[in-house]
Image 1: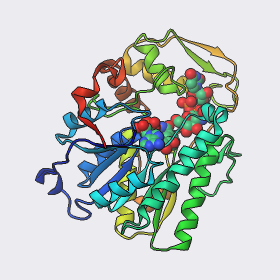
Image 2: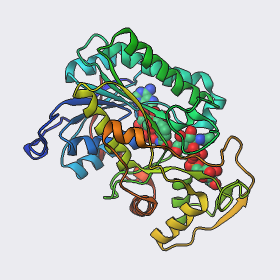
Image 3: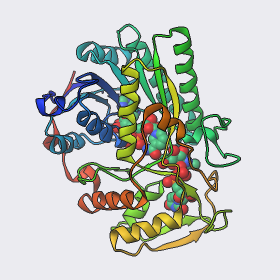
Length: 373
Ligand code: NAD
Ligand code: UD1
């Protein structure tokens, strides 16, 4: 249900006085209560920007707002509603006068997108269109879009740079490319639009405080949350998909990126657009590949626990090796990841230990009051 929410924002001098350049601009974070959005909200505040969250909580828990308050000392503004409701997004834009938008809201499970393509196109592509239609009549002309390295499909070589051909292999991947196309057409039709497309590699980990982190519902699809749940005793063993890939140890290699580094990448992207920089499309990763066994061993080291595992056949659709060339992100945004795989595992483990049931132990009522419109 589209409604209005929530907690008022109380900017403090402490946050604002630390920065000289782009200060106190409001930035709309659609999907801001989710995994990447919540970490980005913290990074924005630290950088002197004011995040305005918009979320329907279809894949997040209002309890995150309470955690964000504990972590930052601020009750963040969060508007509850659906990005597909253009009138609602327009209303949020009008009331908050946001200078930039980061569009995180969407669906992200590759397998589910194969089963429910129409839902994925509706939410991911329709959601972006709705947001753009709501923003178009305002003075805001800066938007950062959450894209994914999955648009490259199975690359011929690594590292992957932004000129690699597209090979989307799922409706999810195609929805991301469609969104990139829509944004490119918009910027072409009206050069006052400044568009930043960020192609994430594999975001993992959690805020070092252990207050916010990834909280997947059901059985996790992704490696790191699964490993965490085995280490904490929620799942019996990790199934390693394939041991015969042409990689050093035979298991799949990925470019894992700490979610706080990713969050900082969004701050750099928004600041570049707000300082009238031209648009860009960049990879966000570390540029380092780590195998499944590499992650497992790093997690065992971080947790001091053994992670039980077995080898099973390859997962359909998986590629052998995948990591980014990040030089364009560095030169364009002045950003580079600073945390390594040990940091990612340490912070993922800290979050998992402190929150074995994710946010579910905390009820919405303790988090924040949510009102229907
Ligand atoms: P997430 O599911 O944790 O966050 C998405 C948020 O959007 C959730 O809070 C959800 O409730 C909200 N949302 C979904 N549909 C909505 C709607 N119709 N209206 C309003 N809110 C809605 O996911 P995340 O991991 O934080 O990912 C954020 C974005 O980054 C997504 O667009 C995803 O496709 C993209 N991305 C994620 C990854 C990853 O590994 N997490 C990798 C590449 C790209
Ligand atoms: C997947 C998505 C990708 C998305 C990314 C988000 C697919 C095909 N791709 O990428 O679009 O952007 O998540 O982070 O779903 N593994 C195991 N056992 C497990 C889980 C994973 O061995 O239980 C292995 C996989 O085979 C892979 C590696 O771990 O080699 C990472 O898997 P995962 O975390 O699912 O990420 P991706 O497959 O890279």
